[in-house]
Length: 136
Image (cartoon, rainbow, N blue to C red):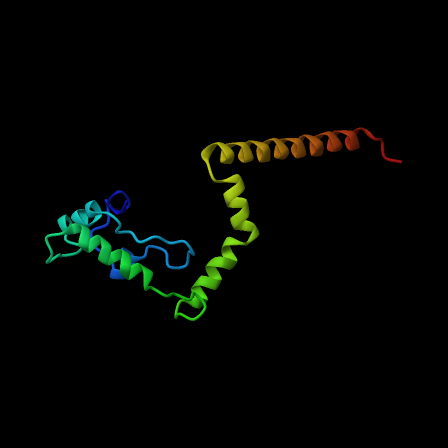
């Protein structure tokens, strides 16, 4: 699993290798299989003194079980709160809803363009109507 996620990554911290997202409740360790350990060794991220990759994978899994993380008590708690506030904001909801794919962006842009043309047509119609009324 890990070697598919980290093909472009050459270096990571130990916490990033052991537990990818400590804030999630059901976070699984990145290193779960012997193939993951082999990938990390080949890319110079970890060095094993053991010949058994299964033992190293089990070691990472047991390390992940011992990781305790409280987002409200760590030094990044302010950033977590800001990130959560942004994720719940109207702008973030609008981005997820209307700008998540190119097609939705094109449809919202087209709708805005049609509304702008309708407003221009309304202004032009009113101005021509008002010019046709004689002054008293």
